[in-house]
Image: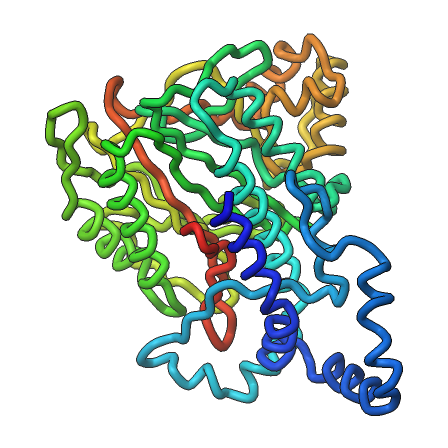
Length: 422
């Protein structure tokens, strides 16, 4: 608790600085100029201003968190996380006037991403405090999702949850969330991957971490955390995707882990990848491998990437299994004639509430949809909606995951979802 409190305090402090930093780096000296002019014009008024501003409303987060993040930053400038300079052939970008101007023009997009990232950080800091063995997985997900909705000031397709809360356990690597009525309970010996996303205007931040109470899994978590950090470090403009995968695998597979007295090599799951992200499109076409031998496609300026790595004590390969909970409308699907009136009706609900963002059955239940499984199957069969079943390793194995979202800005790389936790 104490750690979290100081973390929150720490984060609040540089608010002015990050606004100013963002201003200097990207968004226009205009706002700073106005502020300076106002300060010069009325020094007395400026001194009197802070108390009235404080009286206007809460400027610190509550516990549990309930204040929308936009209310914590009344100037509308959200904090930047980790900034990394480009290397070698791209060093010139840092000081290029042209690239800085380009950045100033693109600032609103980056600022939206920073808001989504700040929501992600605050929600996961809170969840780390409240997640305990014995919790019903459904309660865990609903607590997390309700907190996201409050902090992001959820508003239809303009702001909200970007995809269902993944809380896959043990040998299930990804895409598992409880369906309604599921009675799964989190156990002390479980390894849970908590993967959730936030978005502002379709600008998605996708980040994940692993929760394990039993210290015997610490090495597994460390292997994957370090592999993800390596992937993040390797990314840059003109970097080949296969080189990122090669570096990730080298770090990941340098670890071994002893669980219940048996020692396992940590393997990178070869058929899971990071991915580029587009507006309202969680997988935008480029895959970032986590093993060597991938394609030589290069990363480009302006692209947004989710760098995620999965380490396993099993075979290092996943397949689809278990009951499906995750679905997503196909991004490029045109008009498809549907026979079933119920399918048309369900599609209207999906279009209105999710568009091309992923959703799960619980989200449909919450909207008051009932008896929709036949219609949903019809939409899947017609190719309008794609089911995304859980991805599973060998039964009895353990999988950990860490993931960050970064943007390749014209002058630097910004790791949007970086926090004090990972």
